Amino acid sequence: MIKIKNITFQGIKQKFQVKKPWDDVIIFILNILIAIPVFIIVHQNLINPNWFFNLDRVILFILIVVIIQLILRFLRTIILICIALYLLVLFYGSVIGNYGFNSVYEDYNSMMYTMSDNPFPQDIIIAKLLPFPNKSKIINAIEYQNPKIRNFAIMATSKYFKDIKGYSDYRTIIQSFAVFKEINHRWNYVSDPKEGDYIASATESLLYFSGDCDDHSILMAASVKAIGGTPRLIHTKGHIYPEILIGSNIDLEKVNFLIKNILFVNESNGKQLHYHIDERGQVWLNLDYTATYPGGPFLSEEILGALTLD
Picture 1 (cartoon, one colour):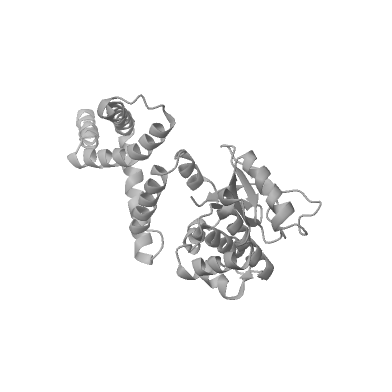
Picture 2 (picture 1 turned 30 degrees about the vertical axis):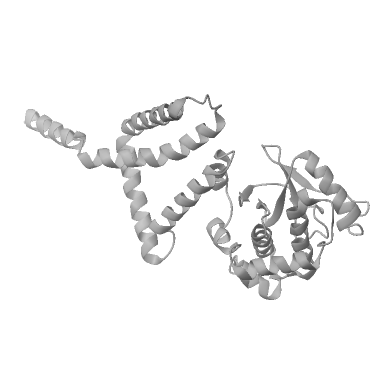
């Protein structure tokens, strides 16, 4: 009787240990999806020895694939269970119209495209992993390619600072400051409904220049990006505000002079610029709705998350 039970148990165990071909296919596909961004990161951070036919990069990619394959095969059972659960969640999301299969494809495709043009591709992944409230909704709301947003931004650049000469290297930043001046001069703070956050699109906020901090940040980021600037959104406790990439500390000195002596003389008189320096040494200047000049005082300086729009 014991022997029968033992045989039965072993038979069940063997059934679970059988390696089906589709398991290997799934593991290999997952391997490639992981290996591509990992290769981009490693490739961008290594010195290129300039081997013939880029053989060093071919060997590097093969090595990455082999290592990931070994790891995935070791964790095969756990990974397959997680994939099955993930597919169920995506299927449910697709059915009810939320985050589904199409969204995953678009996010992955966008991430690959952005990483390929970024000197620090790992920052793209880090930015996606940082906690940020309503992240997907906010990204979709920043309609920087919408003609209405670009036309508004162009109008602002024609209205302010278009006659500034001798600073061609900072033209985009100066024009972004024109956008800042137009938006902040007209912005009217209006709270969200009590039931929760209301995320207005950039074109929606463009109608009345009204809304809360996230609505202002969305419109500012979309307008700045529409004319070639690099904005990012900062999440603090109970607040979101936009920043613009200035560059290095040398660029900050130039921008400081522009703001205090040419562009926002009265608003910035006797005041300092407020900015953040990221892990790459890049300077980001505050563009919050509470500021009367670029680099005005922070409403809240603490950073809980950052959403960079490269």
